[in-house]
Structures are given as C-alpha cells and as structure tokens.
Length: 357
Ligand SMILES: NC(=O)c1ccc[n+]([C@@H]2O[C@H](COP(=O)([O-])OP(=O)(O)OC[C@H]3O[C@@H](n4cnc5c(N)ncnc54)[C@H](O)[C@@H]3O)[C@@H](O)[C@H]2O)c1
Image (cartoon, rainbow, N blue to C red):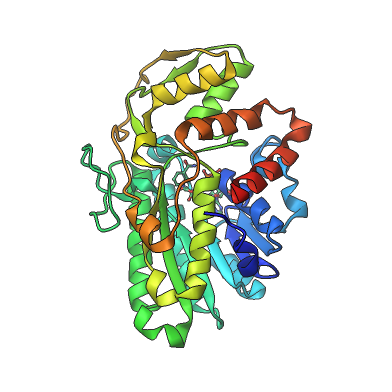
C-alpha cells in the first residue's frame, strides 16, 4: 500500500495524540507533522534526552501537554479545548515486567485511563475518529500455534496483558453504550481499537525490551542477556502499526459504521521469530555483538508463543505489512548506527521511504 492518500485526510486536521512522548507516539507525531496535521499531545515527560521525542524536537512539532491520564479533569479539559477531528490513544504503562511491580497502577493507567479518555470524547460535540491502541497480548494465550483473531477470547496472565484486555472491554462497553454504530448519526464518533505485536525501530530506549537492551549492550561492549530466547513474537518495524493506525483513522472517516471495531496489526506469519533468531539477525547485520542466555532470579510468567491473524486488516482495510522481519531489523539497526545529530533526519527519511515504498 502506498500512503500518499494520508495527507488528504490529515492535512490541516486536528489530532489529539496521547503518548506522544513515547516510542511509537513520537514516530506517529513526526509522520502526522509531515502530513500537515495540527497535533496536541498528552503524556508524561520523556525520560531522557536520548528519547526519540527529544531527538525529533517534539516540543517544536506539537502543542505538548505533560500530564497524567489519571487526571481525568485535565484530560477532559485539554481534549475539549482542542476540539480534535481525530484521537489516537497510545499512552499506557506498556511494560510486562514493570506491571508485576506496579500492578494496580498499570490497571489504572491502561484500563481506567482509557475510560477517562472516552468520557472526554463523549462530551465532544463534533464528529471524531478515535483509534485506541491496545496490544496483541489482549488474547487469552493458549500457547498454541494458531494465530489469534479479533473474535478470540480476551484474557491476560500478567497485569499488563490483563489491563489491556480490560481496556478492550472498556472500549467495547463504551461503543455499545454510547457510540453504537446504529446511532452514529447522533453521536458522530467512530471508535476502533488496534492490537499490534512487538514493535522495533529506532529511538526505543525502554527497559527490558530486546532491541534497546541490545543497543545498550553493544555500546558497553557486553553481551546482551536474553531472558526467554525461545519466545516467539510477531516483530514489526514501528512504521507498520503506525501506518495501520493512520490508515484505520481514514477508514473511520469514510465508513464509520463499518470500521468501528477491533483490528489486529502484525507481520506475515513467516516473520514471527524467536527472540534468539531476532538477535542473531541483528548481530549478522551489524557484524558485531554477542548474547548470553540468563534466566531472571525470580522468573516471571511471559507468554512463550504469540501469533496474530491479520486477515481482517488485509481484507477489510487493505493494510499489508511492507517489511519482512529481516528488513525491519535492518532499518532499526540503521537508525541506531547514525550519530545523534543525524537521527531526526534519519527518522524523516525512514518515514518518507516507508510511505512511498
Ligand atoms: N512497543 C511495543 O512493542 C508495543 C506492542 C504492542 C502494543 N504497544 C502499545 O503501544 C502504545 C505505545 O507504546 P510504546 O512502545 O510507545 O511505549 P512508551 O513507553 O515508549 O510510551 C508510552 C507513552 O505513554 C505515556 N504514559 C505512560 N503513563 C502515562 C500516564 N500515567 N499518563 C499519561 N501518559 C502516560 C508516556 O509518557 C509515553 O508517552 C502503548 O499503548 C503500548 O501498550 C506497544
């Protein structure tokens, strides 16, 4: 798919983007700005100068509100004051291992934070397309080889996965109770959720994620430690789901009643790789690096096998992944190999190249 059509939908439009200071949110911010959108972001402050948001000069690209999702009044005020045409909700506590340390906060931010956002959307007196980002981990994981479809049962063993499954239930409830497709002409809100797999790309510095762990280890000349080398994940370059979210937004404008539902965004099945295979590919591309397998002192449950069925996005949205896992790793490593001063230009170049590929 060529993404030239996106500017027709986003140029001059007002986009409320939560999580704009994060990894995926900052890639989305940069792309939206390239499309000519007017963006207001709502999130916590970036954690370090190296964060992708700072690399792209995020403060100069949008109206940035640094505030907590749990501050429902502030969230509502900021959203209503902005009067968005689109809302993309990416803000979350997104880390599985951290969710074991702060379980109730993870539920508050991810599930109740989504409800607060939808409360605010409910008060918006204009048409709006809303895309809420959850995850591939919302499915009750049966550790089997079948890829999960949107109709499969929701669940979640660890607090992060369960909190995102809760967010999906919140979304479904609000859609049925306040934003039903039957009464669209009255409320004019199109509400979709997007469930994407593990994402890689330049500018991610999160703890306990394999690519940032690898880049940190390379910089320190130490081998990267793998906790679950055999865990299979649907890896994708960050631009794949971001393109999917933007494209889904356009579909919500064209046919709100048809597309107000959940969509999986993931790689083709052959690009589901083990953690070890991903690291080996990265080491081959870089021509350096090493890894060791180290089980954590206190083993925490993490799904071992997770595949996504993306037929719905392919058949109904016409969205198709563009990059193989190998190319996604190559693009990711290419970004990290650029000196800090050239990284913003690399982000812009990678977005342009991806959009036109
Ligand atoms: N990165 C992945 O592999 C992946 C995979 C599937 C789904 N997701 C989902 O995509 C979204 C973005 O993930 P990411 O990888 O960019 O994460 P990230 O940690 O880089 O960014 C998270 C964003 O949420 C904001 N945030 C966190 N807590 C907040 C709070 N209490 N109030 C306001 N803002 C808050 C942060 O400030 C940041 O802007 C999340 O919803 C995540 O669950 C990510």
